[in-house]
Amino acid sequence: MTTPRVTSVRVDEEQQALLIAGEGSRPAGVELVGRRAVAPARIAADDESGWRAVLPLRVARWGGIALPLPSGDYAVTVDGAPVTHLAIDPLLLPGLRIGAVDGTVRIAPPIDPAYETAEGRLALESRYAAQPGARENAVFFESFYGQSSGCNPGAIDRELARRAPGVTRYWSVVDLSVPVPDGAVAVVEGSPEWWRARADARLLIVNDWLRRRFDRKPGQRVLQTWHGTPLKRLALHRPGLHPRRWLAVVRESRRWDALLAQNPYAERVLRKAYAFGRKPVWVDGYPRNDILTTGDAARIRTALGIGEGERVLLYAPTWRDDRSEMVDFVDPNALAAAADAVVLVRGHSRTIRPGRDQAGSRVIDVTGYPDTAELLLVADALVTDYSSVMFDFSATGKPMYFLVPDLEHYRGKLRGFYFDLAARAPGPLLRTQEELVAALSDVSAVAAHAPNYVAWQAQFNGRDDGSASARVVDRILDLGWLDA
Image 1 (cartoon, helix red, strand yellow):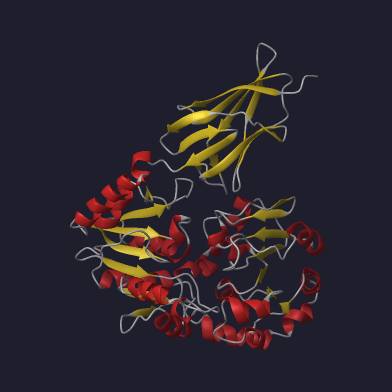
Image 2 (image 1 turned 60 degrees about the vertical axis):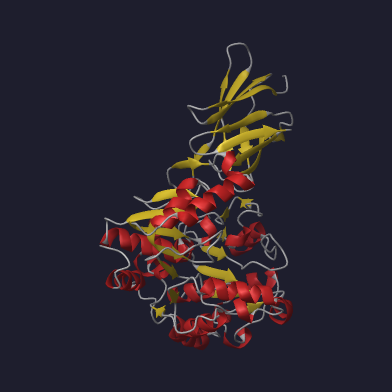
């Protein structure tokens, strides 16, 4: 039997696919393999004893519609071995850009390369600065720097679409692999459409800093929803803050017209950490947590491919200032076997681009899943460390475990805490995976923290009642920031 060999590769623009032709026996598998996505090929035998494979450049993920592959570098593999001699001239397709050099397929957002030069970027910024702006009854949404359409902006979008269907909803995305809500318009960051929508929308709703140049247009408003109640020190409270960073924090917070907080504790911390002065902080609970009361867990489990009756553990650590990828304190395959559970691995938004998906028979990497709150809804227990997800998951009342092998370093040198987690945690603090596995099978490990859990919910989840989105949209419409 002859070993499969690739003889040609070309892009089919109509199919939006790579067409691979080869000699030898038909391979068992041909794939386009990236750090966060894999596209398997359809393979057929050729009439002349060769074979053909069609590698789609659009894939359906999590039960959704087919979307372009995430931007990044990919390898074409034949029976697991990479093809090293690929070359494809750069080509701009409707949903993405593609090219290949020395076997590496590079997929990029569908932006004309002319706009990625220094001159092109300057031209777009200058046009943006000259626009009068705020001319459209529209919202410009951005979540985690365009890497998601979830979190608080996503929940507000759903409520706004229901209450004010005449409002145009633009979503800033890093590329078109990011799904946006039904009826919304995706605008790729840095494209001419992105700059125009950002200028013309009357309201911007974001959950992190405003990137690139931002010039507030007359009549334009900015709602900063932020993305979590803080345990770790933020902004002006971070250790070793450089004066230049201090100025950047103050300049950023002056762009916001209102700030959303999950609870009164977060209101006090965020107001001081961002020097927000006397501007309004809306203590309305977190819209993203409404789904914990109203969501359909069965639908989400089906989308994730989780069988009925399976125990689900969600591992969701925060990022570290001293590393770009997700922490490796857990072996998810070993944890799945020891706990007899499906393990969902959720990296922080800052680890989406540099990280690589985990894999295993009962391991599902959900770092790229659109909405963290849906994962909280289906999880039977949460394993985290210092992530603000602890303040959201507690609204469910389900068990939490804190895997914190670097507690002293993180608390004492890296970031610092606003309160003593060890004294107040609503679940056990654990140092090793072995301790975690033991605690997961020990009911008393969680029961011992029940009083802390009750106090925690009273302080942090008082407004996570399923109606936070409605309260926020009420404010937006009552203030006249948008027309219903």
